[in-house]
Length: 193
Image 1 (cartoon, rainbow, N blue to C red):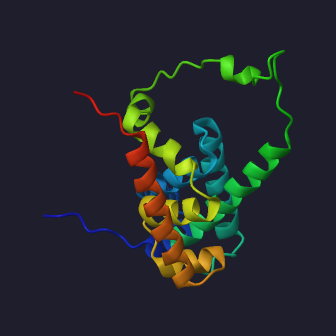
Image 2 (cartoon, one colour):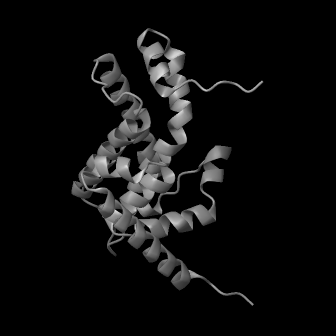
């Protein structure tokens, strides 16, 4: 017999009544979408992990403070929090001066941190890295809509509400993002014989 999926709203209610495992279920359910969205926005795995944790700390504080008013729309709400924290982090990171060597190279580029988890090595597959690199070359508006639509699985209506634009603008940005990605993929394809 298939296991019944409990709605996000029910899990939130149960969590607020004191059942901590309900929040754990929500985190597991939406971790992939939220984390991937953050990672694609900040393009730094360690920073994305920090922002992901910060996102859920903020979610818990909002829930316990009675500030959650988005009945039935937990994922878009959580993604909005993650997006805002990611943008704040990017702004902050852009204000931090780069430490460079005598040739102008960032000294942190020389550091190689060993990844020891099997999951981490799977996520870092070459194809995924190549696609992420191409996505990061897109203009910010196009990149944001692409990430929220394909990786966070939001509707254009939800993206429009989150970004403060209209649906047609979001659809247009997605169209141009896909055109630009196709162009970059064709340009970067290596033909082997």
